Amino acid sequence: MNSVLKDARDFPVVGLIDYIREMLQKWYYERHVEAEKCTSQLTPPLEEKMCLKYNELNGWNAIRISPNEFQVVKKMETYIVNLEESTCTYRQFDLDKFPWLHSITIVRHEGLDDYRLCSPFYTTSCWRQAYLEFIYPLPNEAE
Image (tube, rainbow, N blue to C red; front, side, top):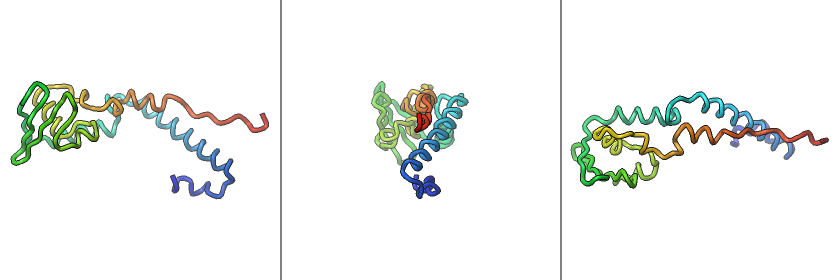
């Protein structure tokens, strides 16, 4: 924000606030338009991340432990993934709430829907809701 506001730093406070409002108004509208055009289930960066993870799956195997738990193995690496609780001993799945190699291995192995493992916050519909409202200018000060 500091670099974005470098041109407005010397403005009086009211002018600075109006500059910030105009900037946010523009950003919200641009993101609204971009979100409305999106046709994928996840936001574009995360859809791309999911595809990249699929390309890294070579050599990983999933072995069922229980109805919701799997052992995911590659050479000397072993992780335990619980799909019901969205947890993995690697911890990345737990933190991001986004499928990591280990959970994607299970999805591929079991033929499951990989999108159900993603947090709803990563979906295009959630992204659209975030930019559903617009930012309007304040009425003229004289009014």
